[in-house]
Image (cartoon, rainbow, N blue to C red; front, side):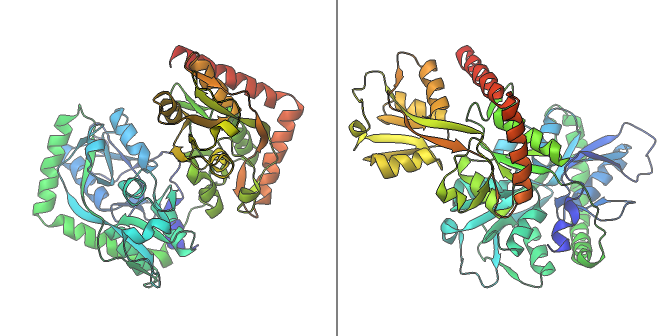
Length: 492
């Protein structure tokens, strides 16, 4: 992988606190700035231990700190955590080339606009992709937590979405051809094209115009007002343009001169959050059998665990491309999937069941021929409905909750899901939903890994066998089934 794309990710995953150089270092309350250091040229790692972080946003917040007589400290965190830290009051400012959007403005207070750019599509120079409509059948990458990824999922909707934690990983996916295209900020795109010797091109038509601001807690209006005054000076004096030019020149020189730092890589597990007892949300935390097994595997590997929440349809593609080390959420082992990924040993067997409204007269699978049937997107249940039940019309749902609502509203005649999910739904809606007395042949569940990653598979197999042998695996399923039923029965 090109050094340029690995350069800044080294310290990313672990909320590192770095003291800034300031004349007022020992005076006043520190100004805590949460930022993500792979958003060039706004905030990036320099490779210089004396001052490891730099960028347009860093220049700006240093000026704010100087004006207020407050030393600046940086919390380097994943992009999506910036908003949480500021909203909770654990950081005074959030900065990282952040686009101002109505949805974000509901959580935080934005400064006045300090820069304007656009979102663009980057493709290999010889690519046949020409515009956003041609991406429908492509594999397209974007950084997790950004407006780029939102645009990709909600507007472009390509065949495969590849979310990566950092911009460097997005760029790297283009270089090694895991992605056919990527959506990113124009300045990041220009840096990529320059750094790779014009191996890539920016498609002519921009997707959107973006306005950038820094973030404050909604209650911290005084800090926002003081900062806005500094931003206006920053813009009027031409300092913004000078800062941008300076950092683009610095970044262009980094691939050959930057120093890389080595760090234990996180064990990245991608999963979907609504498949109890494998994965579900309890008190705003992800819990379940798969979470416990993933934690045990990460501990065995001596690597920090990182959970990446994605739609179920993205689990296999992310593992295939190496964007995630392992997939989870009760993934059924099938011949088709086994041709694309490497599966662990099975850790659970299950059957699929059919749910219908209480008054329905269906009794057999033949009764469902020609009916309107639903299933979750990207699942083997979806394949079963389409290829074996021959539904007259088929509804794809993102999760079981949406499907049950569709069933209750007579949007569909029946819903097919794994037995655990179906049993939980039938128990929750007694008198309204019933489960047909049909058990469709069992499936085996396993964890997918990228083909060739035998080392990870071996560790997962070891953990599965140990927990099966000592009875812990069976106990996990009992515990999380009981917990999920309690949550549903209490309406929490």
